[in-house]
Image (cartoon, rainbow, N blue to C red):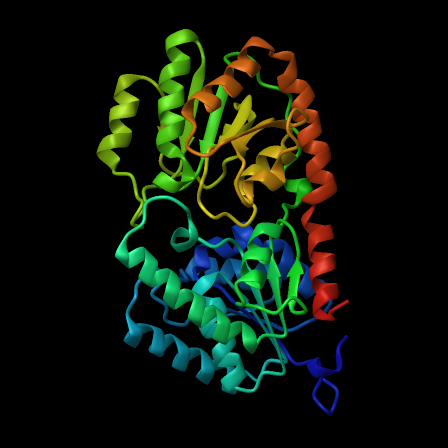
Length: 386
C-alpha cells in the first residue's frame, strides 16, 4: 500500500471515486468497487442522481460510502460548473481522501481541479472515450467551441493529475500529440472489462439469424445505419431478425421516438427501449452489431457480447476496432458505410457456420483482453494499491 494512503497514526485514508451518473456505477464499475473492498480500502463514491434503493445496494454490496454532488452532465453553464468545482473541493477538504480517481469528461476536469485545490495527495483520471465533441463528422460552431473549451480544461486538469488512463491507443496518442497530457503520465489501460462469471458463453443462436445493436439512440452510435442495413438485408432475407435495444436520449445527436417507431411499424426491426438485463436478448442474438462512429473508449456492450460468445460487426474507428480481429471473431467495416455493413451481415447469413466459430473466438478474446479481474488488478497496480 502506498504511503500516501495512511495517516501518520496508521489508519488507511480513503479513496474517493468521482462519477457523472450514479445509476451506471454498478453496471460499469462494480468489479472495481469490489476489488477495493477486498483490499480493505475505505471508499467514498461521489455521484449525482442517486436513488435510495441504489444507495443501499451500492453500500451493502461494496461497503462504500455514497455521496451526492451537483453536476450538469451535458450543459455549458459556467455557474453550474463552478458549483460542481466548489462542491467537490468542499467534499474533499471534509473527507481528506488519500487518493481521488475520476471518470468521464466533467469529473475528469472538475474532480481533478477540486482534488488539487483540496491538496489530495494522489490524483488520477480515467478517459473513457472522447464523446460527441471529438467525433468526426457534422461540424457546428457550438461543437467546435465545446471542443476548444474541453481541450483547455483537459490541459489544465491533467497538468495536475499524477496519471491519466486511456482505454484505447488512439485517444492516448491524440491527447499526447495535442499537448493535453504528457506522455510520462499517460497509461494505456484497455477496456474496463466485464466480470466473465456474470457473462457466461451462450450456445450459438441460428434460427432465426438475429443481429442485435445495444446503444443509446444517437446518430453517432450508428443507429440509422443499422436500421437501413436491416431494411436492405430483410429485402433479401426476410426471415432475418433485427433487435435494437436502448433508450431515447437528449444529447445533440439523439434520434426521436417517432423515427424509431416508424422502423418498427415498417417491420424492419424490433425495439426494446429499456431493460435492466440485456443477457436474455444476447442469448437470442446471433451476431452483435455496433456501427458506431462515436469516440468510444472501448464499448462495454461489445465486451459483454464477446463474453457471451457472439461474433461482432463493428466499425474501424478508435475504441471499436479494439474488440475485433478481422476474420477471426467478426468484421470491421468503415464508419457510415451501410453497404459494407450489409455485406458483412450477408457473409454470416450465407455462412452460418461462422457464427459458432467466430463466437468461440470472441469468448477467447474476452478472456484474454476483457476480464475485469485482470483489468482491475493492473489498474490497482498502476495506482500503487496492490
